[in-house]
Amino acid sequence: MSRTWVIVAESSRAKIYEAETAAADLVEREDMVHPEGRLHERDLVSDRPGHDSGEAGSGPHVLDEHTPAHIEEMHRFAREIAGRLEQGLNDKAYDRLVLVAPPKFLGALRDALPQGVAGLVAETLHKDLVQHSTEEVRQQVQTLL
Image (tube, rainbow, N blue to C red; front, side):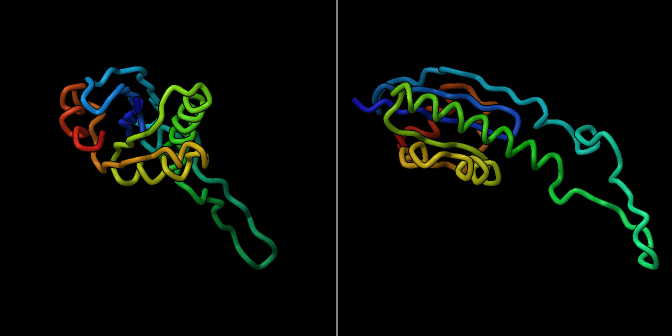
C-alpha cells in the first residue's frame, strides 16, 4: 500500500490530504493557515525604510530591504509546511507526495523541502486549488495518485 499525501497550498493557506491508495477518496488531514500571507506590504512593514545621512560628501540615501516583506512571508510559510512534511516523514505517515500550488509558491515550497522529503515528491501540479472542495481537488489530482 502506498499512502500519498496531497499538499494543496498557496501563500496563506495549505491543506494536507491523504489517499490510502490511488483509488481511495481523499481525506483532509490538516488545514494550515498563515494570515500574514494575505497582508499587503504596507501592513507587514511597520515603518518606512531607514535613512543614512552618509559619509562626508556622499549625501543621504535610503536603507531599503532587499526582499519585500510579502515574499519573506511566503518563504516563511513554505518553511513551515516543509517542517510539517518532515514531521510526517519521520512519523512514517506517507510514502509519496503530490504538491499542488501556484508556480511561484510551488517553487518556494520545493526550495524549502529537506532532502528526504523532496525525494518523496512524486508529482507536482501548478494550480491554485486551496479554495476548492475535496472532491474538486480529487478530480484535479486523480491521474497523479
